[in-house]
Length: 182
Image 1 (cartoon, rainbow, N blue to C red):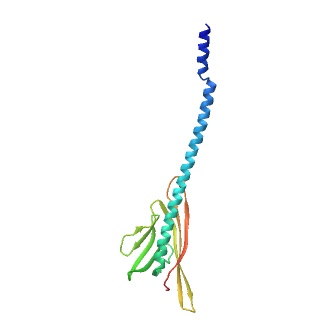
Image 2: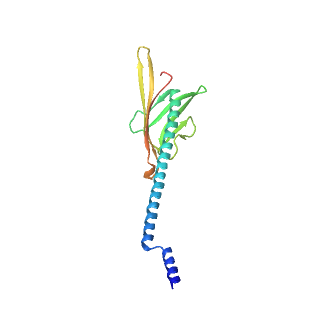
Image 3: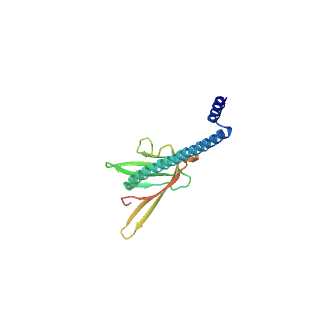
């Protein structure tokens, strides 16, 4: 008899009670929630970093391209009338051949058209360019009879994604002067 009672006690000690099982499940649930929240936070941070990186890269590229073209332009014009699509038209001599370059925004993409070539996208389709403004500023020095032409560029670059985790937007605001005096 004693052997059977001892054997039964050992078997009972190996089993989990309902209370112990509920405690283990609760602890496991808390650990799973903490780990999943960590992964969600990491994913959100990665998305924001990627959006910021793409927008900043496109702003840097667009700024440098505009800077090179405007500084070396001999003629620059911007639309004077309200209601026309914002664009920047400039004439630049490439190998002593005057070439017309046009910057405009179409369907949220900043484009550059050189001569008779097809317009090329300056920004990638993941970036939306809005509210572009090109302003011509002239500063005339009457003593030396020279005019300095500067183009003020304003536009907003936003990451194009429906997820609120990937929202990022910033503005490009710069002024670029022509090397030549007009």
